[in-house]
Length: 275
Image 1 (cartoon, rainbow, N blue to C red):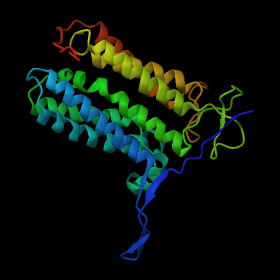
Image 2: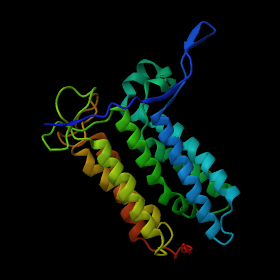
Image 3: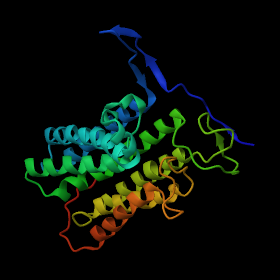
């Protein structure tokens, strides 16, 4: 017995098709992209509230600047990271594959690198320390992560390994075997649980860089846990017979997160939520 996959149409609304310069186009609003938009809007609302409570340390204009470059970092870094980490062979054979966004593919670890570059730029532009910016951003990141995993679930992609647990699902693209709905595990851990953890931790006035460290540690551990039941990427398989690419990329996050939590640093002036 297995749960029935809901088979939600990944396309919310389609515009077209229409022809332009001899090419047929059919733009559409998809659930996956809509989830990214929801995550971005939720992050904007929370960051603006944090700025309002910061007693002038942050302004809404500075938050808007931060969001713009972070969004670029997520999109560009996520796509470049996916191609280089998971489909380097495609890129070598056809460098234009990098721009074939319609074929899908985003990497969290690539997006993280893109956001780090964006935060470095904002820190330089606004004359702040890097971790002052990173500690501001970290508590809202799980919103986008959770929304993205729901998008993966609706698309019926990135499913888990074959299993006989009572909540297993048969995914249309995963063959006839029931599988772990690993996208929902990631939504629960990387989205909901990590968000609650960081909201609680950030209100305890930790030292500078500690909130960023807790994010890296929490995400890395949660990702490594879920990777044990997530189907390995077919083109990569397992390294050393048991490690996935997701786990390999998460281990440095765990180690650096531990370093940030254990190092000596000044106390951060986190403003309490008065509501």
